[in-house]
Amino acid sequence: MKTVAIVSALAGAASAAQGAWGQCGGNGWTGETTCVSGYTCTKSNDYYSQCIPGTNTLVTSTKAATTTTKPTSTAGSGGAQPTSGAGGKLKWLGVSESVAEFGQGTYPGTYGKDFYFPDNSAVQTLISQGYNIFRVAFAMERLVPNTLTNSLEPRYLANLTTTINAITNAGAYAVLDPHNYGRYYGNIITDTNAFQSFWNKLATQFKSNSKVIFDTNNEYHDMDQTLVLNLNQAAINGIRAAGATSQYIFVEGNSYTGAWTWTQVNTNLAALTDPQNKIVYEMHQYLDSDGSGTSATCVSSTIGVERVQAATKWLRDNNKQGVIGEFAGGANPTCKTAVTGLLDHLKANSDVWTGALWWAAGPWWGDYIYSFEPPSGTGYTYYNQLLKTYM
Image (tube, rainbow, N blue to C red; front, side, top):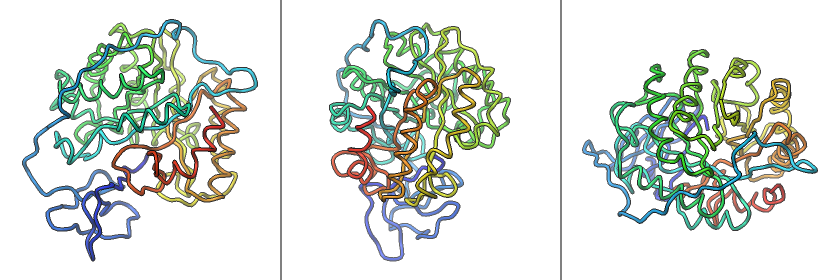
């Protein structure tokens, strides 16, 4: 998502001041820019600022220790990239789980105040209804503090592993999503060797779990296009060198990996190589006027299919596989028709499209316009019945 639009369930109301965890700034923001007492308006990126606790002393405190199960190893999940089933069937339909990356710019941050982890019971509710893929966002700065070549931070890794295992042990796929926009501590990642080292370390932890998918990085943007190619290739090389050979790798593009701009920006990514031939090109697509996913208003009832058609042709012309890693629409009839058109198009072209993931779910999304958190998220209550028909 182009912004990190966090509407926390913990947010409180206040006159002439934004509540705790609420948005307080960003390009196009017209709401309150001051925060309630004890909170400071802190910039996460050009598109989003958030009211966070005004403290300078931050301690990483993760969940209480839990017993993790061994990663699930599913025989037969390796091999060639997915192809369409009879009658046009999507391999994956699921949801992005977003909360462990919250508090962007506040590192390491405090567990339960700046960030959290997905609610496994809510995820299991979605799995029981047939959703079979979950993209778990996390912050690289918390997993490898200070430098990309450092060791993995054990407490944050333990909580991330618990979440991943809960998903894969239930039979679904879990996507590891460094939600960093091609940046580390706010700076564009330019050291491809360090990036490869990061991925080698992380893939080593999950190399025996074939239900894990590696997503190289969320929404590269405003970067040199050759650098985006090289970072993706470095991630692939690091993952395979770790011995993780059965897993799919989702690669993302520049310009927020938008499907609607893919053929204008990301054509060089066709040169990526993988000895296991399990690359899937992850694109994101929102349906509001600027494609940012910040409005509940969709451009038209046909905008869903219109914005992915060129990407569909690119995938087919280049013999590639794609996935819509983020999509959503407002809870209204125009958006619902547009979302239906988008999913119908993916299903009809399932020789190149493997699936789609709704943005987003998580225990801190509150009344966010797209929230898919059971049982009462706005997106969940309005779209759940529709999405289930595409499983």
